Image (cartoon, rainbow, N blue to C red; front, side):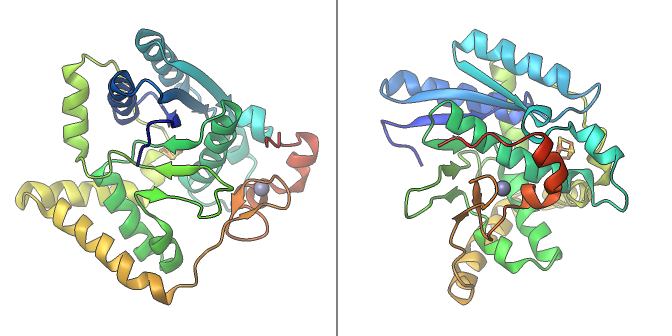
Length: 272
Ligand code: SF4
Ligand code: ZN
């Protein structure tokens, strides 16, 4: 996933996974001095939740002497998540919007700091949940596209990687405790809306009763993905016609979700 000359933007939310990832990558850079890391944090604007996490991320970056870039939904999309959801009738789950907006915000922040790769802290549990969610939602294209490393063969868009993809959530947490990490313990108020949450409970119960089942299921997902790949037309990433960010169609999901009114009032920064 990594090369010695990389500049990696590490997506740091302030939770245990992302802070542990930052610590691990920082340790690696001490052995590879040409590698640079910069932490990027997205403030979604979730009242009484995100403020603490942003502060924790910022404190830890100071401790590790890692540069830190914070971007907010408000700055990029013209509205924070709370405000956006309040105005929305017949809405999807909060996470459906939040995930799309955050992905784009991380891209923008990574380009702003001059990174060539983005590292996110998806652990084994997250990976498995996402594969299964895509299957449950019948989205085979997304199931095939979801991968531990996503690289644009033409080199137009930043590579995204998930270095903790084979580490169970509990082990990531244990690793964090060894460095006396202080991370956010409160859960997001919107968390209960997500089907992902139910899958998490199911997998936790299964792993307790049948240790190792997460690993075998993850391996199966990777193999199924490979088998399904030839039957699915390769999704060439295009530049979104509105904002220039990577998209599988002519306009990216975030631009479609935000609609023209917000975008016109708050034009998105297009960063080359
Ligand atoms: Fe966003 Fe959902 Fe995570 Fe809350 S739980 S931060 S709404 S993705
Ligand atoms: Zn767009």
